[in-house]
Amino acid sequence: MRVLFSFRNFWYVKIYESVIHELASRGHEVALLADVGGRDPKTKVWGDAARALETRWPGRVSVGYLSREHYTDWDALAASLRLGSDYLRYFHSDYAATPILMSRAGTRAPALVKRLAGSPLGKSGPGLAVLRGVLALMEAALPECEEVTAAVRQLAPDVVVLSPLLTLGSEQFEVLRSARRLGVHTALAVGSWDHLSSKALLRDVPERVLVWNEVQRDEAVRFHRIRPEQVDVTGAQCFDQWFDRQPSRDAATFKTAVGLDPARPYVLWACSCLFEGSPPESTLVERWVSRLRASAHPVLRDAGLLIRPHPKRAAEWASVDLDRFENVSVWPRTGDAPFSVSTKDDYFDSMYHSAAVVGLNSTALIEAGVVGRPVHTILLPEFHENQEGTLHFRYLLEEGGGLLQATRDLAAHEEALVRSISEPGDRSAFITRFVRPHGLERPATAVFADALERLATSPRTAAATDAAWVPALRAVMAPMARRSTGSKKVQRARLEQASRKGK
Image (cartoon, rainbow, N blue to C red; front, side, top):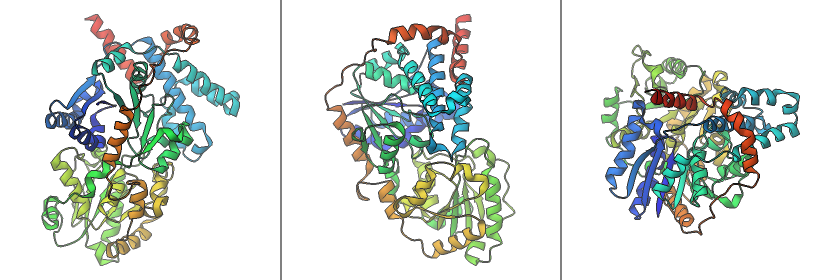
């Protein structure tokens, strides 16, 4: 079969790398298609990771960019409609305790939608339902993007896999619509543990939805009204690479390399990608270091402390100086994401050789659990929105008996760290339920590939066509499209387009 992975950018290569290798090894062809924004110099390492797969599998894996040359008034209106619908999802009672999610969506939502949602009509249940329904009908009446359809047709896939798809105002819905119009099988691969609960609303539903676990299956049904039989629980394939991996160097060599005392154990702080406007995590880490260095417990007072910046927030560490503390290291300061063999070795070794891992709300906490390390967090008021102020964070506390050892102040955190260093405990129940629901010994990668093969060999669906009412509604919408500005991305693209014409 020929599988097309539609990615927002090539960051997602690291999430599906094992699946791409698996499909290629089974003799299938895999095309990787990312938004043209992936050519940004800041994302070069992501593109390099994609091209490394192309080099590893010549003739089996190909890499390309979805290059849009023309952005029209309809693209601007499409962006506005999607951003409006994504904003309205957070008016559901499930999000009453997560105002940060509505606030984030509101910064991009059209002003008219926000005004209507805040009016007496929008504040009533029936009124809000009408507003949602109108936006959905208008989105359904949008014309297809011929450039996207041509790109999908040229690649001639048997299956189109979309990820993440669920970003606010996602343009990947254009790829989904084009695939459906061509009668191609479609699947949403849920890219991370928060995507179904904290991102966009899934309005156009692919044939299959591939999720990590039963928790995400429930989210797909409850939040997005997907039929349970459309959902495949595959496990989290992105973590398979850490299960049987061996360290690239011994503990003493690693500690020396990162600037820690090779004779002492160390605790790893794995930083998070926090909401915009959150307090600097570096400030909390500095408090944490000071506290442990003054601890009454010798094991903490003398332990090495390794801080690993998050790749998307490494800049905040540029001016942080912890040299006044003994046996403390910030490494790597650039927060290198684990894309290459060497950066994966560095990342794995930092977890493997640690005595415990601490963080706020990061996928690294799950990865540390996979490696078998005790995992801790501190629930502080200033970071509430990033932790208990989301829906997905609670899964780390509750599922399979919980992964995290959580405390509400640094004093209790000290005591918990001391206990886990001496008695690490067993978190395999969480890993089984959340990461490998088909059993700890069964990698999720193969289950994922099996699901795609079943989809590819199922009867082809009929090509989607417009409903009879669409032309009339589209004619009504045309003046609105001419007045729409759309998202900032569409605005930039249209300005660049106008500039090219001027030349």
